[in-house]
Length: 184
Image 1 (cartoon, rainbow, N blue to C red):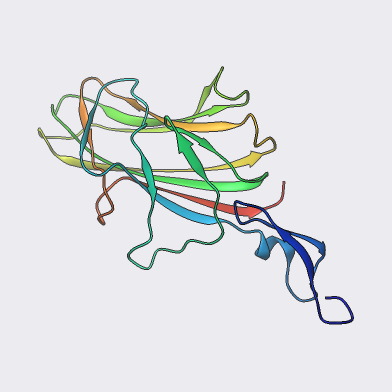
Image 2 (tube, rainbow, N blue to C red):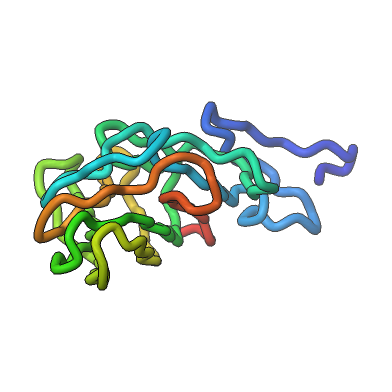
């Protein structure tokens, strides 16, 4: 804090605080942390192999969900970041498969160049034992985002056939949480 008790700072349109003179006793990392949870679509969606999770994602504000600051956005399934830093992302992928013999899952894809090229960086599979049996895959990953203009993420279905992704804001639906842990 300044000797007069004021703090010099700016706040971006995405809610990220930038201190020109950080206050004493308050870590800049704490002020710039981001926690956001989003749910997928408004109901169940049938998806085939290599489909992107590109239904609208909506910020979850019910069930005492922690949200602080913000700025994450998705367009066509591609996620963009409001600031650089170390980010922990956890997907809770809830689905049911139409055929018990299918092995179905989800891949986390990363693009360093705005979506022209992408690579699978993490994924998970399950093979339900009965038709229409529900399954869940929890997919955590930690990224060092160094370029908010070009780095993008998306989730892609990998399946032997069609599966139904559970959407909506209920307790048993597909959700993703973004937490900014610290600067790069």
